[in-house]
Image (cartoon, rainbow, N blue to C red; front, side, top):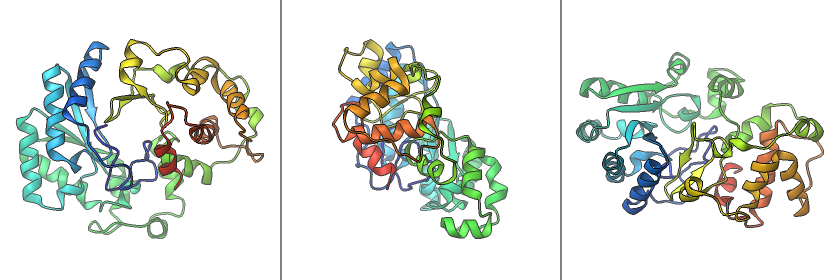
Length: 312
């Protein structure tokens, strides 16, 4: 994740990216350190995301070169394609530069969530430019193209307008079809549309969250922090994720890792957390709300900016 800043603030964004997130792009020193640590840890291929990577094209090229120098393969670069309709000639130039650096595939976002901020004609335009320049690409998710074709491709569309044109329940239906993780800003979708369950049913049969250090699919942010899969808002330095986490340094992380939700709930209660009597849509929703509460207690592994932006 080369940045948190994005020209969009999509409702499903797991990382709560937006124009309001702190500006900044991964710098060369951090990029080199990340690549070295990933290689040491046995990670030899990545994709680049954000935020929106194309907000700083020179920074993106720097990251690509750092990966190449470290012997780490680049699978693809994610983008919402906003830049493809700003200046098509410049967009073609960007694509040629990427190809020259060995970056051969783009993951182009196209869905109703992005359509609130980027006209869906932008990813369609970028796909056509990719075909012309020889850049491989895939539309994520392509099945939404016929759905969106009912809309004006040159405009962004509000939730209310899409509910009128597409479907009154397009938002929860899209979330379900997308298979999104209900973390980050997506907790608001689950909160609005999913039925609530009592606390007892969410903690019954609880087990440790040992997937927090899973390396099947994880993210590293622009500051060199390891972010557990799905559990956004929690982060630890990549160096410690690889070489060992000092005991007692990250109480929230360790409590979840060793004791699961029941142990985290007990820790939160010790700090004054009072669960909502109405319950929560899911165990992950409860966990998110607890971590949001605890971030005000200044636990080092909790990113307060993430929770604040998610719940706007």
